[in-house]
Amino acid sequence: MIYLTGFHAIEERIKSGRPCGALLIAKPGPRAQELTVLANERKVRLSRVGTADLDRIAPDHRGLALEVDDDSGEEIVSVEEFLESLGNIDEGGRKDALVIVLDEITDPHNYGAILRSCDQFGVDLVVTRHRRIAKHADIIAKTSAGASAWVPQAETANLPRAVEAFKEAGFWIYGADMEGESAYSRDLRGRTAIILGGEGTGISRLLRESCDVMIAVPYFGRLNSLNVSVAAGVLFYEVMRQRSS
Image 1 (tube, rainbow, N blue to C red):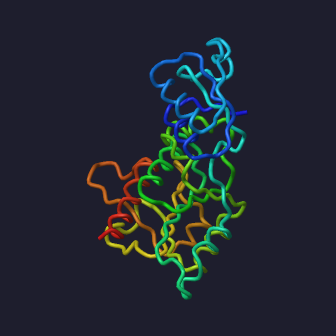
Image 2: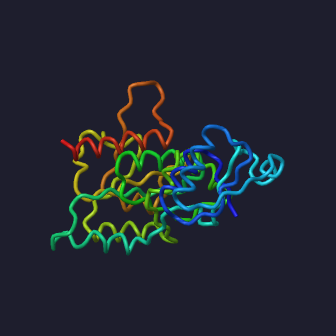
Image 3: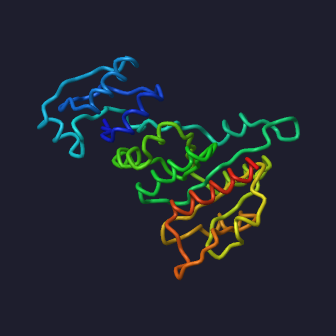
């Protein structure tokens, strides 16, 4: 069993309608009372517990915690299901779609922050190589401000093969790299996939070879690097800006 303890994480998980266990309440403060009302509306079971009990099972709690199963509440789909939902672009299928491929993003805080930006900027799918580690579910849910309950995610054992499937479906593949071309000079509309490399390691060789173009966020400071979650937010915004204009 996993316990979500962030207020936003709990709220968005309940609102998402995905299965969850009881809402454990130790300190009925104002925020806890709001979540209690929401839980009652959504038929989520309430359970009064002692503070010591909650300290033991969810040390980072703020007076309450939500029980969830090991799936951590993420909307898990397959790459094949997602591509099927888009349809064939030559037969009237959806023309605009944004997919994010995460190549070994290991820091759960970065992963959560990226999911938060994905929700804000309309990313259609996040693809990772491995399932999120259960012990990180609460960190991811907190850092994403609950976005992990909403952003569709796909898992695959073979990222290069998944990227090739996107190519065959008409996606243009961009790799994020500070030495790449300015993202502002590229047309990021249409079916677009952006690959983000791991912290400190960047994009792996096989995935780099799969990219059509390497793009970067232009910088004007002395350091030619950005935290991956910050760079992700800038790139996602640029895609949205181009599409909305």
